[in-house]
Structures are given as structure tokens and as C-alpha cells.
Image (cartoon, rainbow, N blue to C red; front, side, top):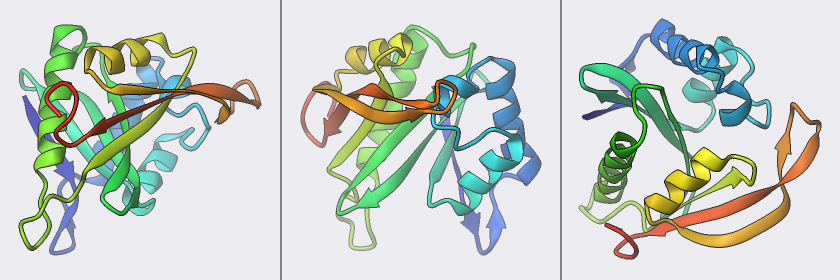
Length: 177
């Protein structure tokens, strides 16, 4: 399993725009757009590209058994914490998704600043209460469940606010924290 960052090195992106658009097309082909982008933030491949390229997101691509198997990204960076998002494709399910999660968590908590100090102490995220696969993955990953926040997420498909599960993982705590 490899975790490949989408970033610019000396102004040159690690993946071409067409590849990033292709990730969204895969999300779409697997019927995951309304689940992953429940708020309507990305409705098209171009929306997704803009969001990842210019939207204050840090994206990584998951490669499993030589194939693209998912992605995860961070945003809402603030004082040693960030919001965590994930999407696993059909070729990364069950125990393999847990394996990926453990590798992702380890990689994120291993990130250091220029002085060699850890960049992050906490990652958090919200999942729609109705998103049972995400809830199950978070539980199996040993993420802490803080509670249900009423009307915490906007569901663009339903055109209303919906309740969300609030999850977090803290450095040095929980399963492999």
C-alpha cells in the first residue's frame, strides 16, 4: 500500500489535472458522490479539481496492490489539528480498508514541521448518521465517538441539514493513536 501526496514541487503538481478529475469520475462511477460530497461542494470533476487544487485541501491518493484504491484529504487546518475526509473504492474494502486506515493514521501523525516537531495532535471529522459504512469504519479504526450533532451537515440532495456523528483521533491515544 502506498500513500501518494498531491502537491506541487517547485510549482509542478505531482499528478496532472486529468488524473485528479479521474478520481472524481471514479467516485461518480461507484455511486459515491452524494455520500462523499453530501454538501454539494463537488458536483463535477472540475469542481473536485478546483477544490483540491485551490481549496485549502491536502489530498493523498491510496494505491493498493498496484491500483488506485481511494483517497483522503485534510482541511480546516488550525493549531495542530485538521478535519479528515476519506473515500475508499470498491477494491479497498473490509480488512484492507482498516489496513489503509492504520497506515494513513500513522503517516499523518508522523508528519513533522521544519523543526522536527509533530504537525498534528488531533484529527476530527463528521459523518452523516445515515452513512453506516463510514460509521462502521470509524468504529473499527478505534476513533473516538464524541456524539451526534443535530443539523451539523448540509445534505444538498435532501436540501436540508442532517445530524452527524462527530469522530476524532488524538496523538498517542486510542487504537494505534
